[in-house]
Length: 376
Image (cartoon, rainbow, N blue to C red; front, side, top):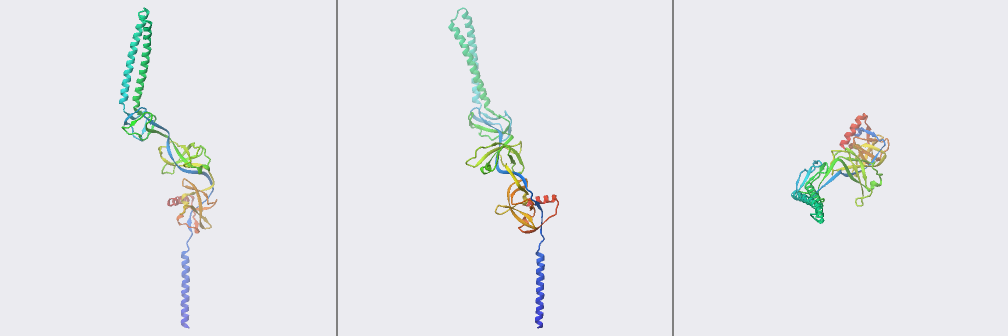
């Protein structure tokens, strides 16, 4: 009996110890709520944007073509460099045109000599006709010879002028100031007057961008030349505000797109022919929310969500995004006014996790939000 009582006492002690250990372990595993920063969701109005790609081009782009035919002998410029109006760009073989000019000069001098002789003969005939020393027919022929000689001189002078112009055209100048494109022909190539394109010159002081939007976007938008256009310099988020100057009136049946064009402000950060991001304002969004990019979580299935603080718990909310503005995402659905959106600790959050709001100054909230964005 005594032994039984001893064993019972030992069992009771063990049970007490086990219960005490469990209680301690439960106390140790109970964690304090995660400290988070929240942002109150407030509805705003903003623009709706359509995003696409476009290509820059010069507003004043001039094609340089040969005015005379011949073999290209020299290039007097570097492709891509800025050139001045009147600067020689190409030199076409001049020998044939120099020979033609020499011939035209000789023909003009011969015609002038013929005119001198015709004038002399006419003066003599005019004196002789007074004393009836020549017939009326000879007098009229002498007078006609002067008229013919004068015409031949005028023709010879015109041919000389044309030959001189052709010789000048063997040196092809830049018609305007701007940047010369690549040479379309190589030295030694035969170029044809009025046909062969030698190069193009773009005046970069004013650029425009051509782009297209899908017919789906067109059906949801009202397009006028007052619609805002943002053009983004490559590798930056800095937009240039452009002005629409052309809106196509027909959908491209093959691509299902509408062509548009906008004029860019003067800039040295873009060159003709560059591909750029373009955003076109297609309407307004009402009762949407602007959130830091770091507060947005992308799920494995490609959808997006945020965490909202609700009764001391982090609750995941699926949201729909429209576009970004600076460092902010525009959220069109999934939130309501007054929701406390958690903007930090995103990687540590999970649905129904206990959370507590930090008590910090507004400046600190902004700083922590920026840090969360950098990690994301």
